[in-house]
Length: 208
Image (cartoon, rainbow, N blue to C red; front, side):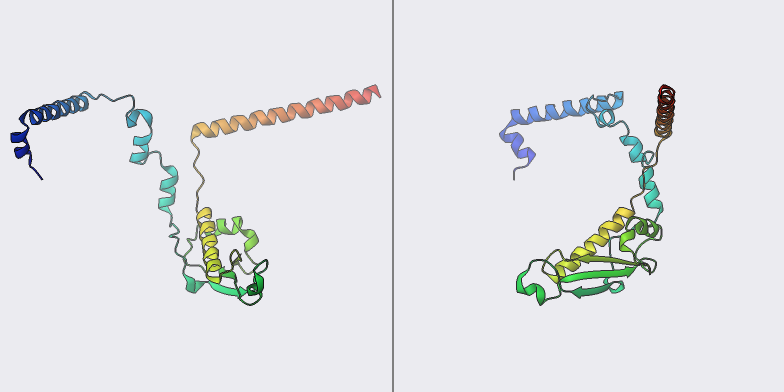
């Protein structure tokens, strides 16, 4: 590769032009930064709240999650109970020979790999999968391969735990005021409709 000194000897005019252009660009950038000028398409103009989020002022939900223990996504297989049986549905003669259906079971209260604050919400969201003894049961017969059905069960468990670990977004005072105003308006409309129906019923009784 040729260095800049060699190129300056071979193409002196072109190199001088490049140097002048570089100096002009550097001076322009320096003046714009020192004057505080911001373009109409700058990040601060397009996303005015980006600096607040960067400083941690607008990330209420993220801070709430960081304060709590997060689910890493790792599921220890030695704490799970696997059961295999014959799968239903189409599959030819192989379906009656190989135990491809997979059932995974574990006790939620004894699962050390699930954070404690996620367990009550997981039980609430997936109450149909929880037995009386507190066992969480997941089944899969999606494919005709036992190992793939086992992976599908683990993926289901992981997805449900991540779903239970999502915290609700904290409402701002403005949003709370809007919700309260809408609830009061809906309550007024309900009372007006109730009064209108009662008047209509009374008028019908008088006409009869």
